Image 1 (spheres, rainbow, N blue to C red):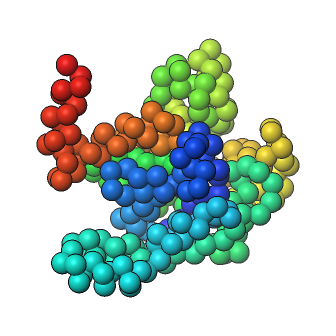
Image 2: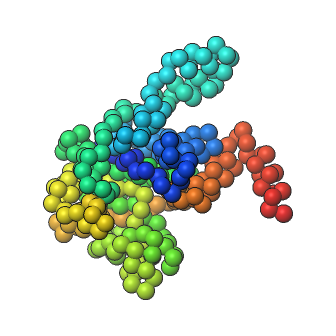
Image 3: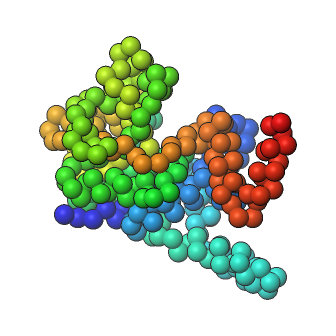
Length: 289
């Protein structure tokens, strides 16, 4: 069975929930402590074994390409200024993986950027991650958990988490049969059904492992709600032809796409940053008195 070496990360969105901060910079480049959101996601993917990072971008996303490019001038300046620690941090960014950039073309919707990368993926299984979803997984990286399930069953895998009644109105909810520790065989995914109609409290979000046949289903999937091409619609079509599994992720999901999630992530990572954690704890205790 082929190992998962490629990941598609769609980053062409406008980030309107963060305006005006995202008027002139990509949402994915907003910093959490001292690193942009997208770097956390890519570092976790690389830790899972990913070698090729396929970023599906738009015309306002040049800063992402620049961030992961080599900057010899900045490295040299930092070394000459006696800031070797920072020079090494900058140097490592461009060496994380093989970066591939393609421009998104086609209808709106989260299925389009996946389909755009078909020619790069070929006949290999691959991963999809979103550019504003971070998982805090102290034991095993988020994507590696999905890979482990794929290696066991050989079929597509969806990342999932347990949610509450409120979450049933925010996420796609999985109806499935438990087949192992935190692993379910998916029967269907119902988009934001609400507490009364939800078949479970298992929310689908944050990433996927796909086999190449998802591209055939995306090509056949009609444009749907909001005149957009939805990945979940293609998954439903694929589900009629082969098993799909869901893995409850061992870790905490951080929805960086919301303002509150973004603030929570900064506090979380700040409390785990050696340079600022002590002063941050002190500050939080003061303001929360």
